[in-house]
Length: 87
Image (cartoon, rainbow, N blue to C red):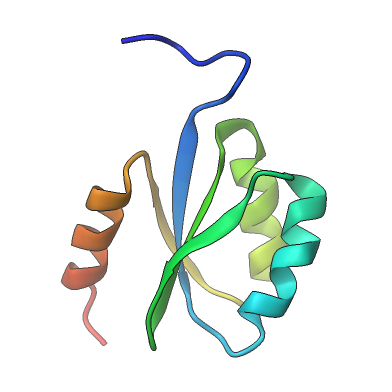
């Protein structure tokens, strides 16, 4: 396994999907310019970011009233966690 020091490892943040979350992605990109929403449905959203910006993005989301559930290293695991969260 190669450590991605220059590029950064990806982290997937599971968050509650709110109507205004897509508008906040521009503010999130000010923290990490590579961040984006990679998956969303009516209840949850998955935000991909680099690992060294993960805590700053989580704090920003919590200040905006968006609940974050868990952070993982793969999107497959993130989707599995979403299926396990009860509504």
